[in-house]
Length: 390
Image (tube, rainbow, N blue to C red):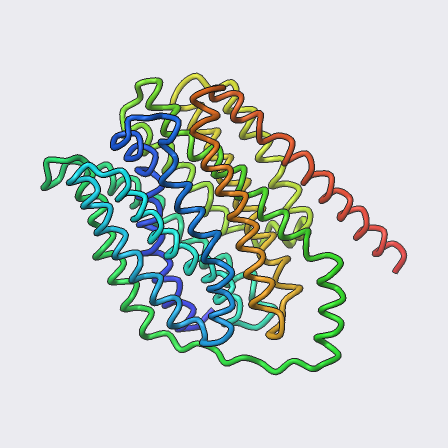
């Protein structure tokens, strides 16, 4: 796929995601360190999710009016500011300042979450799956670098642990910002009135399915992922062990992107989504019986793989309902609902694990997965019936 603009966007995504992985590895531990309260240790990550919830829809509408370039650049600038704020929160031991940084970081992620839609808009419809896969695949690099960079820089240069880790947000984001300035964004395409009408009718009936799929994928993933560092800290694991588990989790989130196109061709998009739910069931089963680092690593790896199948599949599914007339609204609503549930899941994870324990937290995810599996099986049956009739 020889597309200069797409590769520049992928490069920016890679550098941004490294900072994302640093934050995922550190946020619960920094919250616990600055507040010394396990119940609220995941509040910084929850604030990030809440900021994503608040900013996602307005940003989508804004991109529809002024284009993606300015919004994407503002997100990277917000990420630079977030790193500076995190650094000062550690230096002055201020939990509230950590929360302020989390809001800026949430704005940055809100912008970056639209990269996947932008990547699919840069190519022909037949190439959307490949563009999405390439964008997601750089997460493997972020998974290798992010947690390891956190661990390596934990006590580098500064007396307060992780100061260098959060300060690395700044140079990484500056590189991403430079890449953004070289991207030429595609112009909007005209859409015939009859096509818009058909698309609208189709959207009103079925668009809730990919949105619900993305909601469950993100909600279950962040619920368990956010609690993992706290669970391991409670059982006296070293940070290097936590970083190891998170690293494999993130590899699971993005490594399948290398072969997900082949898998989709074999199973179909709905089949891929069903497989994703089953992998998440396997993840929870593994977490329930895990007693050592190896077990937790496998459980979190499966959590990442299941999320990948559901997130990539639901994003591609959602694009089938989108044209230039409804793009801002549908993408904005999708992000708001997805990160609304993710905010609730993240905020509740600290309380759940502290009050009810690790096993109860994993079991709490099962009802959502069961509901999603029923909907997807019904969709698969309806699709099979249509093929038979045809």
